[in-house]
Image 1 (cartoon, rainbow, N blue to C red):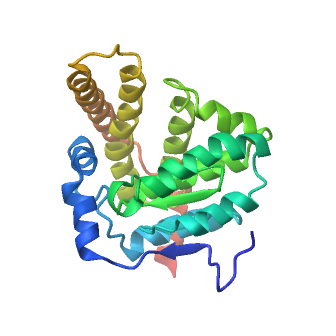
Image 2: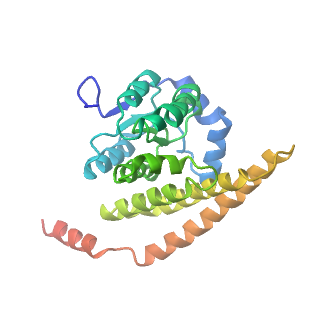
Length: 264
């Protein structure tokens, strides 16, 4: 689908304070995410212009002309149109797994309340609900990763594999986000990315392990315990990585850019 004034590449939902408050501070998964990442901006449903601009710049810098970005917007009809016109994956996958993903993630789980930041490869759409640049660029990284694949259908199918399917794409998107901040010589956001994306990756690992747990009355307790351990481990690893990079941070190209800026 081509973008124009009636169908812009970037759209934002109308603010509804009550709904957004429920989605941010009442919905249990949102509260857990805030604690897990230790940042109230996760799924806060109020996205600043600065955060939106990071994703816009990322998409334009990487020439991702076909991806749609929705900022805190629930638009199931428009998402179905994008799914209908999508030619990025095999039609069989699109109308089976893709349709199921659309019904669950884009219709039933109303993003304004239950939504988490995610990328839908079947409709090639990014959904953003958090006000953290590292998170939104991470989602942009998924769209870039998918766009670069020769066999997109197989890659999309691989992501749907239980337990292990998300590990590689999530790591790749996080790495790309960190590299992008370095490319922009943006030390502040790069350091924040280590503190944000590493514990977030821990949550994916925890989810994969939880899928292996047998059904029992204590399954939920075990799952949240695993999540706490995995996220805490991610925080530790991210903190160590951040401190390592702070010592050796300034890339040569950023030093050159800084010198040129001083001479202006």
